[in-house]
Image (cartoon, rainbow, N blue to C red; front, side):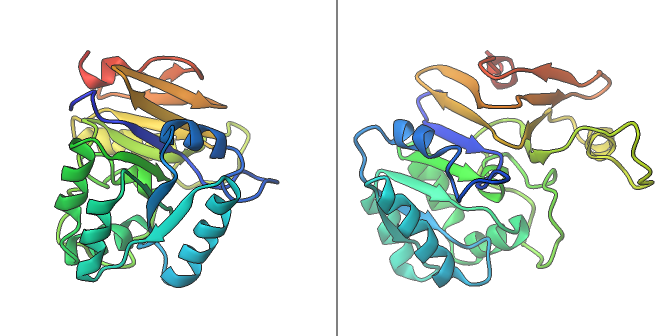
Length: 237
């Protein structure tokens, strides 16, 4: 990937006890710098109109104008007009399929590689990876493939929850599921805990927010990375 790209990949859009984007709006504002108009991609939820209205209201409080991307031809035109995009969370399978069906997936990737600021939360962060194979979501719809934007060369797992040794739950932990992914795939996985994000810009790739992340690699023990740590090694740097 090109480190000339500017990415902000957020684990979650809402922290417990806080309003929508409260924990990360300052970081988003910093990533945007002087940009005061963004496109919002609402495809991860069913009611796109309501979702777009909620995003517009929240960003308006920060002095940022939001225009909502549609799956119609004018969605492509909007992406050409703006210098930044925010892809909201929801169901990753629905988000990816809508981007594929509308023909916007490749165009969005090209715009980001050409310099458009990309911000995503949850599902919006998932699709920045090569595939959506490490999403936590249920496949409520079937995309044409799992291939996503490929803005980063590693997989992303938002909302990462650490194993609870005292838990009586007998289902698989998130750690076990990610290790199952690595039994069949070689790409490392960046697992972002709630409240964490990854910022890539200016030749740097730094974890921000709180609670840090874990890195999963095939045949290795998971590695802890704290807030403020670099993950340039995942970019092959």
